[in-house]
Length: 366
Image 1 (cartoon, rainbow, N blue to C red):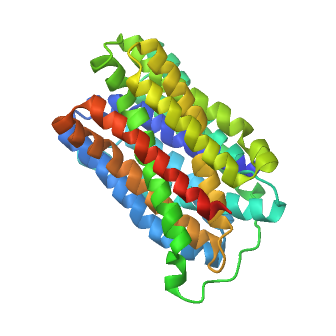
Image 2: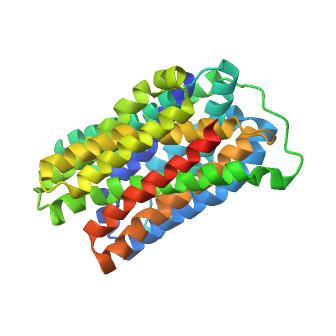
């Protein structure tokens, strides 16, 4: 449960920043370009720090890293709301990205190590904690915004509560023994890792399509109301959360390979329904099915990386996280550029075969 709590706290901190993004943009009078630059620096800082986390985790342990980052992230969240100007906000966003990237890689490395030691699946439960945190952050932000609570009060209060929770949780984290260090740097870039990494990139591009463009597709292409268009995102995240709450039990019963292939099939069927069904209500149901099917795919990929022979798992997990962030960073932009040339409907439809191609990654799950 302590590992799941790490995912929950990290997700709650980051999700609070994400759902308050319009308030940050308006509060600092940022143009679209300036706010986009802050987001780009966030992602680049996260990816850069992930290159260092693997070796550092192998040396000092994920627990030591997380005890620091769980305390620093809430302080940065609060600091963003009280920064003295837009450039300070931009710099703070880059720092938040760096610490979040470090936390993301370290917490997944810890979960993989605990799963190996326990001999049973736990990764889906951990990622379910992250999904639940996003729901909690969005609902609480909606309530606070409706009540007229300012951004500064919200962020500082949330930061203080998250800091206290992180200080309490840090000493209680497990400290599982690591594996032997890799014999050569090249070992960390084996063919199975590359297959799993490219699989993760494809999955995150598809997830970016569903989350970043699903609502726009429903409104602009299927002419859904704004409320119904927002329901598509809610349906996706709801299906994803439900799937992750049951994913570990299904993994133990069926095995990672068969469950992964089933998840790809369900997600692809749902996405095809979402982008091809002419009625907006059917498309919303399709997004729910997409979230349900895709829910287990990334946790199973992390678990598979943890079972690869040779290098320290923390190094491999950091590599995989880098592939994931490449998909998160590139996916929405690539979809937007493609939509300019061939239309959003055709672009979203093209995500279906991309999602099906991820089934090839199941060969590395054995």
